[in-house]
Length: 305
Image 1 (cartoon, rainbow, N blue to C red):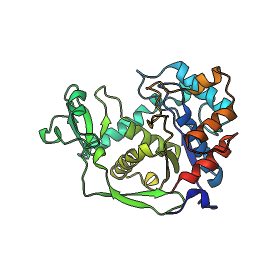
Image 2: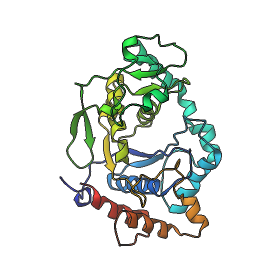
Image 3: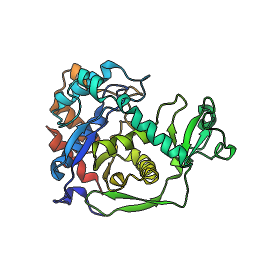
Image 4: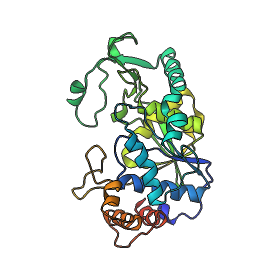
């Protein structure tokens, strides 16, 4: 397979995005993904949209939103569109303003018969083997969609093949991963779920380049599946890059919820942006220092194959 690092020319793209969730302070893994997004935006001519994924209001706090702006500024990471500060975000860019669009799509899916109601509890689902996906427990019950305390899931078909367009290399066609069978599009509280909001936000913005971690590989397929049902051809033509994850010293994925070291903590300890970038390259296995997002991204792309 071809390394991204060795490719000198890329097809031009219009828009990519940074899409942090304000449920904790940004950490080193976020910075790696943001740096790679900026890198490929620069090489495809794409503009960068800052989109804050704040649908889960129970986890959103102002300090986490402020941290997004503070960290991007401190690390010298660029964006061209989207909110400039907290006030701008709250007044003009929160996902809550796009609720009518999400609800219209849910109605479209329901009327087309693509959705079923599910009353399975988290404890029931937690007992399933890891990565096995939803077993279809409630699909056969044919519960009314207005059943109390029910989520809405998509009817998925194992024999449907989807195609991911990959930037700078050949597309790949596969069926929907088992872990995404019957994925949720509306949560029990009535809010639209991530797979739906992310897809529709990309459609509304005109995103045609998405750079994300390999942990979101199953989500890419779920969103492509939704795009096929909603006939969103622009998303089916979007170019993707799935980059390796930055792992902690014990080999675990870095996580805001797990309390992994945040950029804010490092700043408070006196670290410079260059020292933070160098720490990321070290965790990636490189001895060379990186003083900027450009230098970090140039090194990180050597890992792509």
